[in-house]
Length: 360
Ligand code: UDP
Ligand code: MG
Image 1: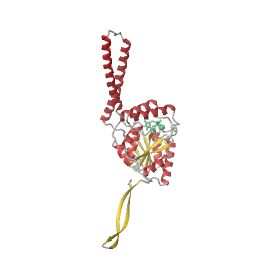
Image 2 (image 1 turned 90 degrees about the vertical axis):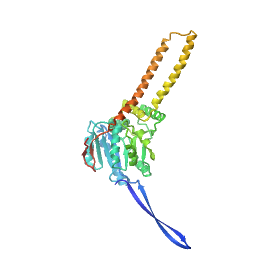
Image 3 (image 1 turned 135 degrees about the vertical axis):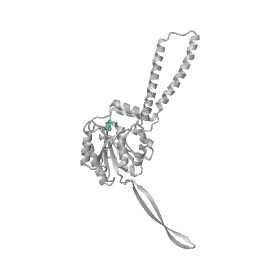
Image 4 (image 1 turned 90 degrees about the horizontal axis):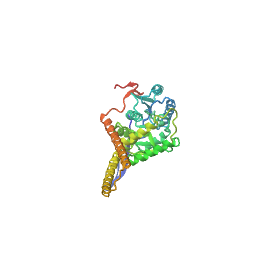
């Protein structure tokens, strides 16, 4: 129903000479061209306690979807899919109301709060079976909806992943700017491929989503996984605005743990670093041993309490840190080995399938 195929028939005519006489031959060439215009597009928007922004966001998205349909850029079956991530406020009620009043609005509700990345994944995997292409974005209107046109153009040109890259950080505090820059630098040092200044605002084709579905990890860091899918990609630049209303769901501590999650779920460099530090310290201690013996033989040993205590603390700290880092990875293995579901869907509101309560 979704992939549009066009069968083109070309009649190629050419002249041939057989035995001095000339014939006109006709060969029918049939080719199948995958059409990437007018895809069924789904906007996937994870929402956690977003009652303050939802009326505005939905209004703008509905308007945009209508415009794109009128311009013939997307199929009439295109939709906006809100994912309620276990909100404690009226978010799900608002989504249900929107669904009742607008055929183009669908919603899925998770059984509880599972975090931004899992909520987004739930939306993407649901949309994968209904859409040709999906644009994921935040609920707070920080991502520029107007960039969708350019994303669709790149999609039509054959790109399977189109990253929305912010071209300014003027709206961020200096701290957020500095920490973001440090994070991207650190990640590239650790051998993790990330697209700088791109968050989770991107277009993905169904092919890319099928690829994403193959990544079964519980420790989700979508920004790091999406480039691993491969396929043809492009970037679209946009101006990132301020949160329209409500509060950021990523305060400092959550941001730090998100970064640690990103590093430890994508790179094993920190463990190697510890091994290297261990080797270095071992050689340093051998040198110290030789030096100690020489000093002893020369009768120059003094009661070096301070140097002793300093080294005890330094080594002790280093060991604790190393155990902590290794523990972080063991924790990850522990979680992965459990193979717990990354999300569970409680309810689905979709005009195609109508309201449905998932049996768990
Ligand atoms: N979000 C979510 N679950 C959470 C936290 C956040 O679905 O546990 C959603 C939130 O509703 C928003 C998006 O993730 O649509 C990004 O969150 P936010 O705008 O608060 O993050 P920031 O832009 O401040 O980094
Ligand atoms: Mg935001």
